[in-house]
Image (cartoon, rainbow, N blue to C red; front, side, top):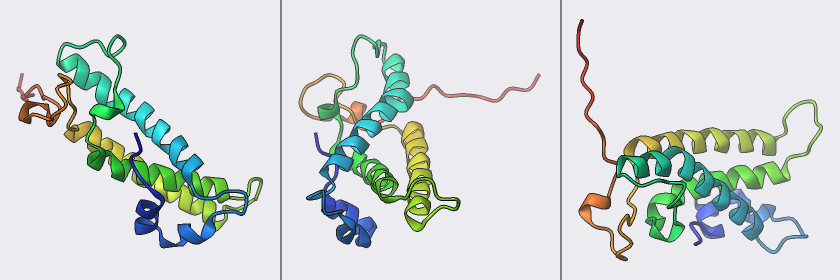
Length: 150
């Protein structure tokens, strides 16, 4: 499942369109790498705890990307892809970070913040594989926590 396109990348970082190296036609390889990383991260920080909260063993029933709402994943995919793109363009071995490396780090931080937000708020996921997202499938169930004084 594709979560973002090159036009999604240029909506966030307009210069990316003009930075495609001659050896590449577009950023499809970097998008694939980024989307795979996003799915791994979502499996770890969001899906596993959410599945366990629903009584599902995430090792037996792993995350299925087609059950996610692509519109909710797009911001994560775009930020991770921009991190990968700028990391690809960065010059290795420099004493000081070049502009590409600084941009890669900036998008890594933004991605990390967005991933934390997703882990907290939850995602819509077709838990029962019905092909439609129902209201109870829209976010992670939370166990209420209360502060008690001793």
